[in-house]
Each structure stands twice: as structure tokens, then as C-alpha cells.
Image (cartoon, rainbow, N blue to C red; front, side):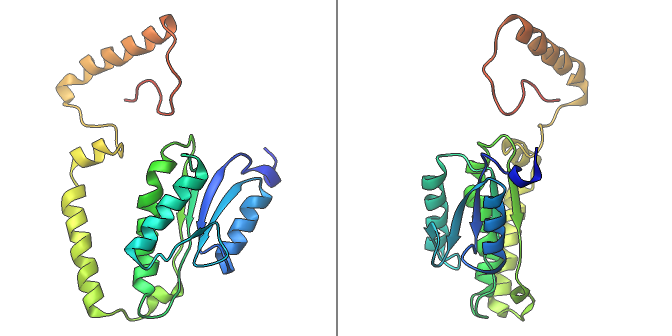
Length: 194
């Protein structure tokens, strides 16, 4: 594939796309043949303030409306901001962008996501915000660090009891053999994973 058209027929959402690194990234993707959904506070396809919960919801809804149900890439680039919002934007905004657009990425055959952060994250944050961040992170770790949660979200292929390995392998071989006999519907996950 030619380098200048490497993003042909792919759709990307870029936050912070009205200026700076976001604008340059959006331009480069367009030059590579991509369709870009620009997201920012102004001069964008989707206008959203990622420092607020409502703005984060507006971003996910706006991108979903414009991408037609499938998104091939996300560049979570919005950042900077005044000291009183830099953590809300640089951390919570980026996390909410990736979480909110993840279902759309799941429809792509080759999804990609990039997150950048601003130098603003090096500022001394408000201790109350740090406490809140620690609590939110601890809650997510408690609720999302189990093997069952990871399997349910296809972060891995599940758990198998080692005693069942031969049975499962036989089942998977049967599926592969059946594919030669009966046409299967195309999918993005493969017929069987082991």
C-alpha cells in the first residue's frame, strides 16, 4: 500500500482537532486518505467539552452519529487547559473518549487507538482531585480486574481447566472441519480461538 494512501477507507475521530497536534494529526490522516471526524470546543465536526460529563457524552454520541457505526481509529489528543481543569481534560477526558468510542472501534477489522497527554498534567493538581482519582481507580481495579470480567470483554480468550484441554481442542477441530462442509457467515473474530 502506498504510504500516501495508507489510511484509505478508514474513519478516525481526533479530539483537540481544531489546533496544534490535533489539527496536524487530522490533516495528516486526511492526506493519507482517511475520513476524519474532528472533535473540539470549536471549529469541529463534533463540538464537545471533555472536561464535563455532558461533553464526554456529546462526544460519543456525535462521533457515533457521524461515523455510521464503525470507527477505525481514535486519537484522544485533547489536552492542556487551565490549571483548574487540566486533570479533568487530560485524564478523565481521554479515558472517557476511549471508553465511549470503544464499541464503535469494535466494529472495525483493524481498530487503533492513541492517547496523548499535555505537559499540563505535570502541574501540581488539587489534592481533592487526586483523592477522587485514587478512589475511582481503586473502584475500577476492584470491579474490572477479575478474570471473568476480562473474558467477558474479550480481553483474553477465557479460562480453561487444564483437564479440559483435549476436549476443547477436539471441539475446535470439529468446528474447523465443519467449516469445510458448511459455509459460515463472515465475522471479524475468527471461527475459533484457542
